[in-house]
Length: 307
Ligand SMILES: C[C@@H](O)C(=O)SC[C@H](NC(=O)CC[C@H](N)C(=O)O)C(=O)NCC(=O)O
Image (tube, rainbow, N blue to C red; front, side):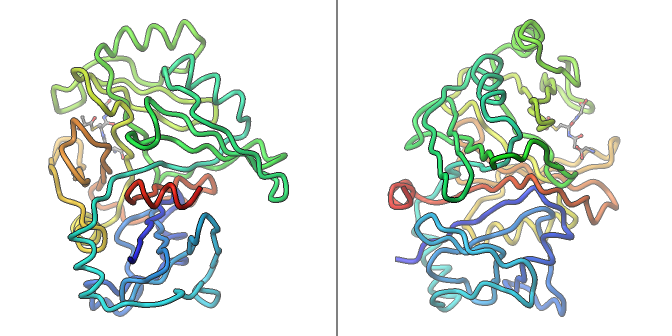
């Protein structure tokens, strides 16, 4: 069966358009970058016309850094066949991968301030990196974070295309108090979101990754959003719908603050992690970073296969 693993990178549109050529549903004469900061990797098969920055085969990433050095799909299938599979597939967001400068420091912050559990760690000395998986429940039923520590690298540029991760909490003010008491950095105090009613706050982890705390009732999936800024919202929505079978769950324009958001995912927002695509009026490109946040989307059987 064809498997597709999209990889969402926190690098900018510049990196995206350099690394990824999409022909999907587009007659664009140049490579479109529907998702600023998003890269996609395709496992085993390739949707017709999609080229990718990374191919992932049983956990191995093959890097292709420029159009002249594109990793080639192992096999290709027709677009119709691929879209048929997309409709049948039972997918969800599995984990988001990004780089941190001090693994133990981040694990301490996520467990003590954000209440996550350390699910597992794996060291790959031959490749000089260590991964740690953290989340609010087991990987087979929860969206989790996969931190990557590259030996000796203590700093990354997050760029501006990646926005933040969303965490649903029952009491934002209380959570913020706890985070402050633990020495965490709060960048936006609790209160209603500008132009709306939801109570939110923003905090920053030790590497500067932003987390939005969102006040909600009890939820099975506290790690509930990955926010990415995109330069063309309609094109991004179409891309996620057609290539990955996601649904547009909600769209909200906020003209007063000059942005529109679109929630994309595989199920209701209160039960599943979703992508929050943000379009800021008139902004077509964002700064490239090297901290890469990649979101893996697949069904859990494939996740086990990757182990
Ligand atoms: C509940 C959900 O709708 C939100 O929280 S939206 C949060 C809001 N987002 C933006 O402003 C996006 C546009 C911004 N220019 C960007 O690129 O990040 C937000 O962050 N509000 C800030 C606030 O203080 O309310």
